[in-house]
Length: 101
Image (cartoon, rainbow, N blue to C red; front, side, top):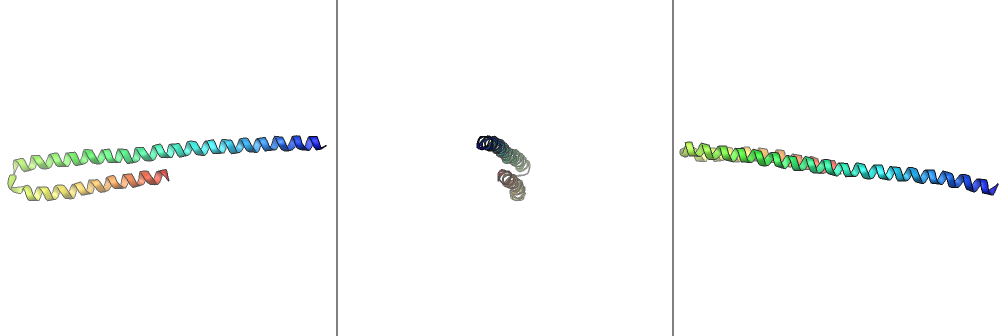
């Protein structure tokens, strides 16, 4: 009788241990995918901002070359637009970091 009780408990214990191992593996996989997704979100947001600021700078240089007397106004507008683009990049980085957590 004691042998059957021990056998039953050992079988149930192995099942519970296997379930815990499967849950741990699932959680590890989900955490890894969260990290990849967060990194991609932050990285692509930064790349997009870099491209946008490059376009802004190139356009401003061309505009100043065409009309040098408007350099102050063009420079001011360029800085405001670049700040807006950087705001979007910062938002993408924050969302990426929050996705990891």
